[in-house]
Every structure is written in structure tokens, then in C-alpha cells.
Image 1 (spheres, rainbow, N blue to C red):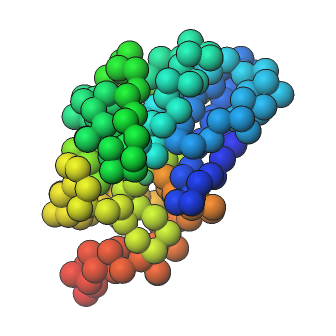
Image 2 (cartoon, helix red, strand yellow; image 1 turned 60 degrees about the horizontal axis):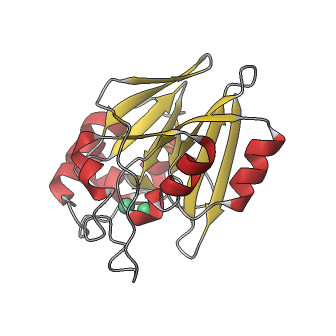
Length: 215
Ligand SMILES: [Zn+2]
Ligand SMILES: [Zn+2]
């Protein structure tokens, strides 16, 4: 598996590229503000960018959807409940950032349990709402790409368009906290991955949920 993280901008937005090392088929998770470095990487590794996967519809995660789709002919994948964020500057928050971002529409809508195949690799889609209604996480072999659901020591904001704090906690409780402790968590912002084990130690939202689980 080829893996690369790009972190950029003042809010340390993360874009990830994953690829099958033999077929060179690749996916990009959240084309936020990274552009040139990703182009260089794609060229150097001779990758075919098959899919652009948006963990949710906020501008800092979809900013370069149009750029990469146009350049590489990739398909844009998003959950149906966030699909309307793509072309709506109010929903995707670009309006608040001072511009009007309109991504191309989704080529394919992905739901809980769907598999995204590239080469011999597979990412499984998990519907993990709360930060937005259609937020998804993507898993593969002990690694979870969670968008703005969980950060090292925190969770995603729920005061933005479509946010729901109770729903986010329900998602954490039902889909995240009981994953194997060695599971690696790759967030939508930040410079380092973390683990479930680490978050059970440092993340107040995890600790809060665990409060009722002790004997
Ligand atoms: Zn967001
Ligand atoms: Zn974000």
C-alpha cells in the first residue's frame, strides 16, 4: 500500500492519498488545500487517481475537488446526506470564508457498508454522522480515516451547518470507541495519526463515554 499525508493551511487540513503499489490505482481522501505537492506525488509514483472521497461536505475538505477531478478525470464520492453541500456555498461554509465554492456534483454516492475498490485494495465506508449528517469514515486493515469526527484529544465541531452533538457522541459510542485499541486514527486535521488506545487516555470525549463502563 502506498500512503501519503499532506497537511496544509492554517487549520492543518489533511489530504490523504492511498494507492495499490502494483496497479498504481489511487484514491484521494479530502482534497482540501493541498494541490501542487499532491500533483508531484501522483506524478512521481505514476498513480492513476481513480476516486476523490470526501469524508464530508465542508469547504476545507472539498476545496480542490474540481481541480483534481478536472486534472485526472477522477470520480467524486460522498455520502448522500452531504451531497448537497458540494454545490452550496452556504452549506459548505465557503460563504463564511469569503468566497463561493461550488464543487462538481458527486459521481457516486456511498453508504454505510459500501466498499471502494482501487487495484487490489478496498476501503470500507462507515456512516459516522454528527459533525455533519453525511460524515463518513473509511477503514482498511486497522486504519480508520475519520474526517472531522475525532481529533487527537478532541472531536469535530457540531456548531457548524448540519452539526449534532448528541449524534456525534452516539457515533463515537457505537462505532469508534470499541474498535481494537491498536486501531490507527487518521483525522481531517493535524500532523500525526493517533490510536484508539491513546484517545482512551487523553480524549475527554472518550473518557466521558468510558465513565459508565468501569466496574
Ligand atoms: Zn468539517
Ligand atoms: Zn475540517
